[in-house]
Length: 174
Image (cartoon, rainbow, N blue to C red; front, top):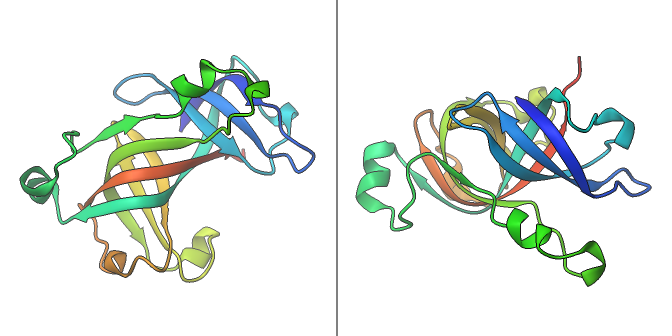
């Protein structure tokens, strides 16, 4: 997906893990986003330039709906069937890193499953996790659901997943 790196909120540490503010572009609307990076060197992220990024949402607390009609009938969150709310970005930017407040790249979202990966290891993920490709507002992400979520075993294309997710991002390989 295309994004513009705005700034590092925390510069990557010696293990190249940091927090990066991105502006997602190319979807239904441009939006600011906070993502955690892993194994990403500062030199790999040109600030202010449009680049391709891979983004992964890691499910923390989720609800799964069969389809949009099931979501409309049963969801009580008052969210749309496709929505992204970067809940920690404004909070973090109103504080300073030396305030001692933790940075969390969390997002509240409703997403639509577009593909379920039958073999997560073939896509580069650990065996046992559930991996899907999802779409939200024209942005495509990978979604990883931990194996203890047995209710997700029957995940299918067209499902709507809502909840709290942790965001990971890294520059796409050319």
